Image 1: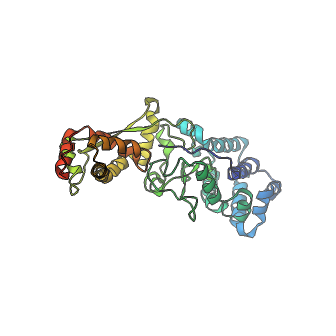
Image 2: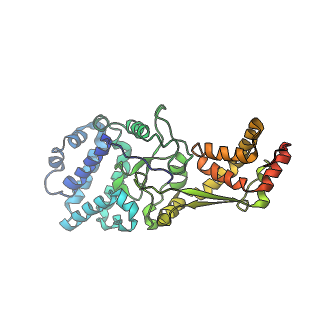
Image 3: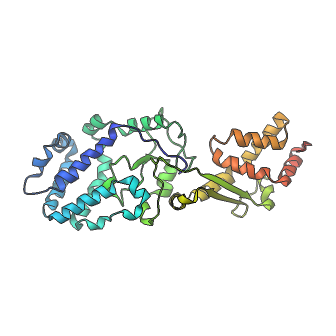
Length: 353
């Protein structure tokens, strides 16, 4: 990832406490008592259980509770252990091989509880009882982005659009560990991050990201490494960046992610899951000609040498939209004297660098 979110203190994280209570104190302690006898000890769960608008919750909790009654203590302890493991998101990102598979849970209970939690996310945070107590996803989204002013585009790809706090609604929350494969962490906001639609849906989707057994970046990580890019343009292809009718291909342009070697696994996972090198290639190939035009425009307006114009744009635009690709791309082009000569010929310039 290019950037990480700074975690904020928000009451929505405490919604997970309800899920913990539900699993540990009700499902894992299911016995001959009625389910409601245990539910009523928790004020919020009792309200959900008794509210006709959340009848789905009551019916499914009862169904799971009945099956959990049949479990022996060993099976109940396994359920608890798997649940805790699947909700230690940061540790799983750092050590994905420590993931305990869902298959260790009793088959009948596993299927019921997995289906329940996959659907629970869609319903739970929309119930008025929950919104009144923990706030809404929109409120949390606005607070998170407001406190993370350094994130102005998708932190994963660096260019995907995120809705601002001033817009209606919010960009989608990505279940970093997709709920299809890791349903027990579906309500955990340590597992929910705003990403652009392209990263969230088009690329990552429901990939079981821990199953690759390689470390992955944690979007709330506090030690995200410096990531740079090496961009190489084939000298024989330079003319393509002047002639706008020619299409750039993989022989013309090469992009390599540069990072401390101790993060090789995270970089590999990032590229495997989100196809970032392929997408960054597309951004440079699409925008490279316009970026070169920026240099030509600055030269025309300032009458400075092309070398100075390259240097100014490389410096001034490095932190702007797509600047992390624009600056290394222009730095690479500046090294080719033949390109400068071709630009001068096209531009009718007599400026000598």
